[in-house]
Length: 124
Image: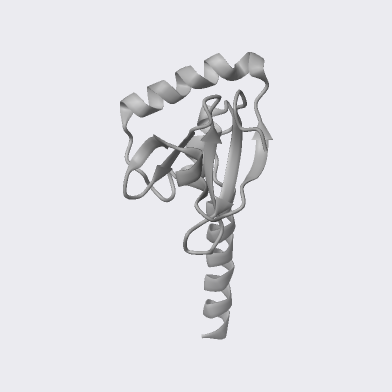
């Protein structure tokens, strides 16, 4: 896969094996992402990938690259800490790529927890 010159929201399996970790492929071939231990940062493609397959979730049109890079620069300067609900990898990546800042995985787990609570309440 040619990674240079492209900007895209990408994902790989999380190290825990549960769900996916998202980042942003940058035109340099590096990846911007946020993690619990380092917060928002840029790493190499190889560091992000590890031994996992990478999936391109959504590619950004080249006309929008400059705007997205400015947004990335702003987020890196602000250094908001990682938060599993309010500032996780999905929200970070989608914000950079000018998408709705949301986390579908958190939404799924919140709905699952809600129904589990209902089920446990009904069983008790």
